[in-house]
Image (cartoon, rainbow over all chains, first blue to last red; front, side, top):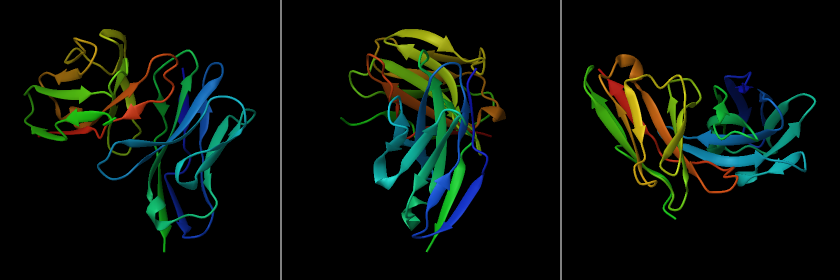
Length: 113
Length: 114
């Protein structure tokens, strides 16, 4: 079985401040890890993924994430948040020998001007 | 590349009616997935096709749900005798051959059962 936990329902930050959205996972074997963003009444947009290699992954719109195998975490980060980053963020995991994604419950990010 | 498209975008129906949703994947993507997202939750896997073969179904997919991908291109998801608990966003995604690691999602079909 595979699962994802996003411990924070909401994250609030001021524009220009660093943004962190937390994610921990559970999976048998090595994971593929993903972050998606969802705007109201829209589908999911891919931000970044970890497959193998460098633990620090860079993605779209200035986001990055750090894979930590010992802590089974994959936290999303952005050094300087923008108001336009306000959205719902989902972490997802799949096993390397599977195809279906398991998602966390999501974290709502609000960036205030 | 026009992305994954879904039709309709919104559907309101009365309890007990049947509904059918369509998903057109990115061309030449041989894998297609259906997920369901209820309010306040992340998407949950429903089923997965490789070409026209339905390879896996979640236990969430009750016998009122049926999915097809007859020619390995577009897919349909039908819900028979809809219930209020079926109200959700139904998301379709596709991925390419090989490892097909990246799943590209469509805009979703939002279903409201009255």
